[in-house]
Image 1: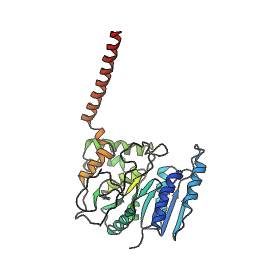
Image 2 (image 1 turned 90 degrees about the horizontal axis):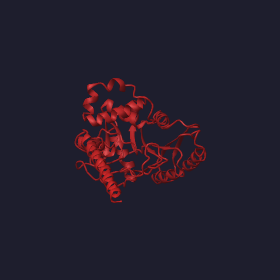
Image 3 (image 1 turned 135 degrees about the horizontal axis):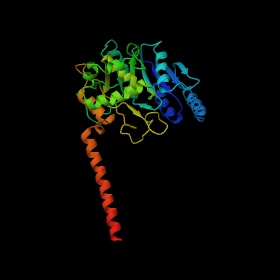
Length: 318
């Protein structure tokens, strides 16, 4: 089977880049597309950081056809990645995509390669992800299941799917009022969550390509292939991240595991149970449930009351 081209997206984090580029060096892809954003004008340190990153990725020391798309000025996360992928798919029909903070297990590359070939002509599938946020819960006896979520910390797709990307989700105002939207996201709490997210995408307050990508795939009703073992670890949580700022996030620095002998599921159908678990735990849906909010507020009120009574007792004793 022919190797799938790899897209490597970098910016201004030399330490992360060294770690993830070393993974690519071990994999020795035959075709490598490197996309880099430019320094931000209001961040003086970006000049040397971006230069340092580009020096690292310029050292491709294995037989490889390398194509580079480096921005001179900062385009921002959404525009840089979406325009970069547009550039990639001008010349290839499929690709594996990794960012500078995604450390992939060796099985990730073979998994993507196989899935891209297996579902190459299946319009029901738009994404192959290397992420598993199920915290050890396995779904079925196959090596993977199907999800509605387009997790993108190490993923792959086809030109046939990416051509439908609409960064401005121009369809959202009308679709958000439709029965199709309500039927696809039938849980009211989850629907409220995503309505807020997509609304912020539309008004420009979120600089993200990933949320529009999710919306586009939902709008078209397509699915993602998700492994039953986590294949990619995100090491980018911290203050220098864009949307991954908290190092305490449950998805930060997850361990990866080999997938083992590949076994296909019997049907192409989304796993509702897995998707619910992802929303509740990875996206924080369980914190948005009304009963939980009441419990949280009651606990807070009890703590305040206890402090008040304790302080009153101390004052009276004096």
